[in-house]
Length: 287
Ligand SMILES: [Ca+2]
Ligand SMILES: [Ca+2]
Ligand SMILES: [Ca+2]
Ligand SMILES: [Ca+2]
Image (cartoon, rainbow, N blue to C red; front, top):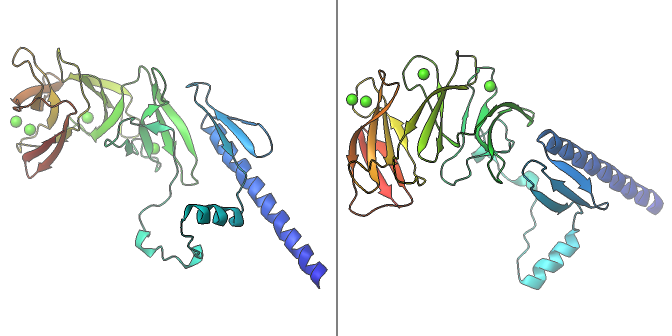
């Protein structure tokens, strides 16, 4: 009986090892699809690298056993709580996500999440933003699928920066993706309602002679007319020599925004503004 039991444990260990190997292989295939290269340094250590950005890291895939973790925790005075994952009530998170995954697209800066939209109406959302982190990077569009995989759909070149809005600024039924980079906001529009927004529509210069800083911005209808308004930080050194807080409005004749109103705060604000629009009034926090 004891031998049978030992054989059973050995069988379970082999099954577990096989499952782990398949899982690691799947993960490595997924990383390859995303453009990452890998190399086994030994059986349990993998080097991951990206030849485009020069990024490199070394990871271990060796699982630490429970006893070693408990001993380590005890030596540090960290309490160990034993729980059964199957007994955790996950109902409160139910419906939050249909699925989750990751893509190698970011906005670099905190507080301004990447924009996600299904511009081409094929049922799969695309993520818009920077790709890569080192040097003069690119903007890429990745589409995400329910099995967790993703595929590159487009590269914006030269890159127009972090994604800030999805809007239809001229109300023509074609949506635009808006990027923020340096002193400008870049607007790209769809060709039709089943295409990605790859056509440059216009570039809005928010700062003239002063360098840009990161700030949160808003596009909203502020005064109830049919023309969208843009609340942003900016400068116009023909008027003032400091950074101003602006409301600009879309002008169809210019096919661009036009600065309509500004406010010069008493103290200059370097890190930008955080804007909240409430019932047509603006509340902002400078930081
Ligand atoms: Ca899509
Ligand atoms: Ca439009
Ligand atoms: Ca107006
Ligand atoms: Ca307006």
